[in-house]
Length: 412
Image 1 (tube, rainbow, N blue to C red):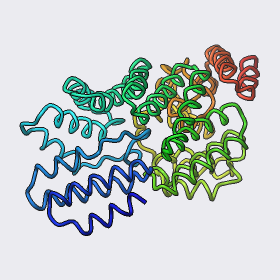
Image 2 (image 1 turned 90 degrees about the vertical axis):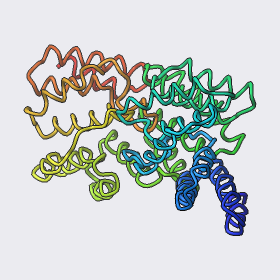
Image 3 (image 1 turned 180 degrees about the vertical axis):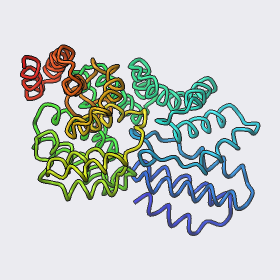
């Protein structure tokens, strides 16, 4: 309702300053409603309008109007809006007040977080140093907590949200903490803080945060082998994302369901569905498609698909995507590729189920896949060690199906 009223007000605005101010109010209402794609479009409209007038002051107003944090990135996975980044870089060359510069720095960092770009940390740290109030401090801390994987920073977000009555940071702080707990092989804390975040998100009617928390709980169900529960939660969250206009709605639900099929051994029965999600999320799903093709005996096509794969991004999906690639390499008996992927995954051998740190999807522990790669490479002793480690990690995550499989492989 608020967004509809503000859209009407924007259409009837009487001058440039009022027009941009109303667009800023509109994008904040859209963010609170979970309509992140619409909010980005509203901001783009305000920025381009200001640019058409040669008014940097209005462009700054457009960027600093985005004051609400979001639990997930505000752009489609693997993309960067370079025109937006370039405009922010140009504005940051101006003389600015500390509070305005801090807000622009967090806007800049948010456009690049997840990329292999050292300026993200530099911008977030400077934004924190310049912060003149709790909102600005929290905005910078949120980026630093994500990049550093620091539970103490996430807890500070929660404390700021509690002390200054900013419930959005009480929620996002907990969601960041869930990802950090996952990376630390701590599913108990992951579940607890996610449940707390979900309760708060429902209380304050924050649709995107509700969906993110539900997806995290779906991931835990997937890890535990409760595939029907996982599918139910993913479907529920996916519907909420579509309804509100999340930038991640396109393809995510289909990806999550495909991961369930891979885990429960039915991927081959869904080849057409995997082709469809690959059409939306290529190159993220190239190795998943290769596995589905292999399951249908289409190894020639699977190898052609595998040959088209590119480098894997070093972000929160790294172990998930690298494990998918390793699984395809093992399935296709590609010894030449196995050596390199083995070395890539080895530093993560003690880590959680692959992808758990994304709190979105997961596969069996990295150690299990290392065991399979070691078998392919003829390193049986190393394989046994990896499988034993995988069994222990799976047990820690209450995943008896994975633990049993890894134990059986460790003794063969």
